[in-house]
Image (tube, rainbow, N blue to C red):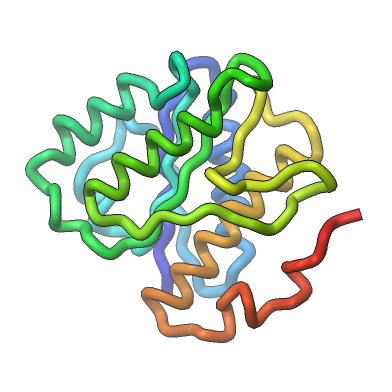
Length: 185
């Protein structure tokens, strides 16, 4: 059974709502156990537990929040190199469109890469104009259907990769699921 952790920091509640949607998407893949943890309540044991990790942060001046960075700098520092090879992705909520959410996702991916995670983006469209190339992004609360769909898509893709990489379930590989590769609408 694949294990997915959705780890997030949320200042306003918007990133927490995205985390719930990412977890919902991960739960769509059978035989996947999903946990959601706020960075304030998370421990290294949570990171060791999971096979796949979705990390979410509000966009702070175009990058991840200091609280999320502190978790990796301090809480996880002694565990560097010990979580190598797990699968990971990112998501972020900004104050508005153009607020740097995609760059925040890239900064999250950079931290994850330094810890040895295999990071990914999603080339599929969650809507006519919405992709998750660097991760799911939202302007404030995820209200629009396409933004919600992008969060679910990111979580589903994470669970698919966990099924393939951790559980050897090649039937879950995205290229073996042509129905998930079509443009919505």
